Length: 249
Length: 323
Ligand SMILES: Cc1cc2nc3c(=O)[nH]c(=O)nc-3n(C[C@H](O)[C@H](O)[C@H](O)COP(=O)(O)OP(=O)(O)OC[C@H]3O[C@@H](n4cnc5c(N)ncnc54)[C@H](O)[C@@H]3O)c2cc1C
Image (cartoon, rainbow over all chains, first blue to last red; front, side, top):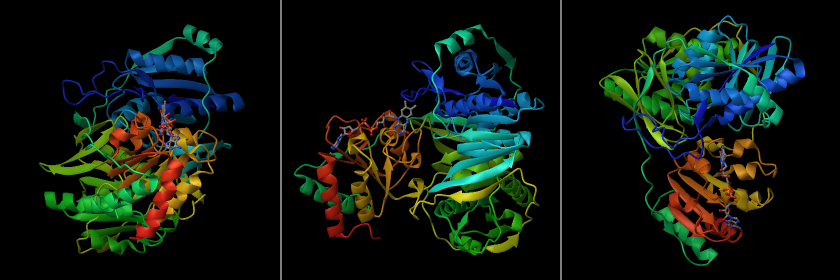
């Protein structure tokens, strides 16, 4: 079995976002980059399949040199090889999907894993777009996965519950929290990863079709009000304010 | 045409779809185009209701093969309908299904896609979308270079506007079988309660709740206010038996209710990312320095175990949450 895991480098969740001088991109100063949290579940699932059934796991990231860190980490965790597609991995999801499709097409991957969303663009779109471009099945926001003979059965989160999706491999599976508990890299894994080479390829050129024309910080929330008194008085005052001022009820 | 992919549930249009339809009507008026509503399923009974929200045309793709949702089949029929009608804008509610089908349909059409948008406008005949990025820490304005422009609308953000339209019903072809994937079963429909993403009132508990049993007092308040209960990641990860589907935040649900009450939640940046789009935020925390107070419209510094039961009592006495 051949498995591709697409990993995105994203700003750490603690990052304070600043807008760059161009008014439409992220100011990269002071940004700490990490592997997308959902991508960690994607990679873990691939490694578990490899351990259970045997598989060749290829980790891939679209980005610049810094994205090699994500790949190095994936190798340390158990990916067999890693590919850096040199291109803009932070931009339009459709452009990124085209780059990955161009790489993956014809290579015989049975499964392609990615996170159900990055936490940068938050598009939640790359996986389904990739599945469509490759003409294969998709299962999105997956919390449980079982494989059969050339088939899959996946549980996906929906409003108020989940639904079971069945389909034929190859398929794109986008991981959701709950799918598994990602492991930490072992010292042995980290040492071994240092010796592996990361293949570098130029991504196919794919122009963005949805473009960020401006980026702004959210408006400050108006200052709030503290309600004083004993609990019963606070409760009364709160409900009254929600009713009269906020008109929630 | 502005085309809106709509979902039916129990013969009624789901609220996120009525919100998308209302947004679509506004865009249609702004650009002098007709509004189309697209439905798919084994039966599309109930689709006629789209006229209430201004649909000029109601397209129905009906067929036995569409009884269960299939990502590839639905994406195909949506893309086919866009093409057949020459639509330039495709909208869907950013629901589990909307977020599954819209990007796939967009890729099929080579169209740009903006997900979970909170603002939509027409500028010189082209769609412009505003959407939260970096987990709500910034807002991006998106413009499109493709002929077809696709967006999913975040639930609870766009107002529902009733404005009668002609609603001429027209059937469109349903793809034949042999789909790549199909939904076989729906599991764990949680007691008929609305999902957090669609809830108007959310009461969330954090580590300050101390254990899972204590969430009972939040349930009681939620019942009194007509809301549903959510949680911080610390609470979900604490082995208190709370499902991940309750988690609000960067790695949980992004919610935008009218009222969000945070009980025993400190207000970590990852939690704020999931709920700072709420219209009114109430913080109940015993630590006056807790960051949650910085985003709160109303704050109560106190012990939640004292305050929450009092709130429930007062809410019942005032008879709120019934409307
Ligand atoms: C990659 C990543 C993703 C994350 N994603 C999320 C996410 O999606 N959602 C999320 O919520 N977090 C997320 N987190 C975790 C986040 O950083 C915080 O750890 C978490 O939100 C803290 O939860 P909490 O506020 O319940 O707990 P704490 O920070 O421990 O706060 C508990 C609060 O309860 C108060 N309290 C205690 N007892 C009482 C009482 N009796 N009465 C009143 N107040 C009381 C305390 O004063 C304190 O402020 C993420 C973290 C990372 C690194």
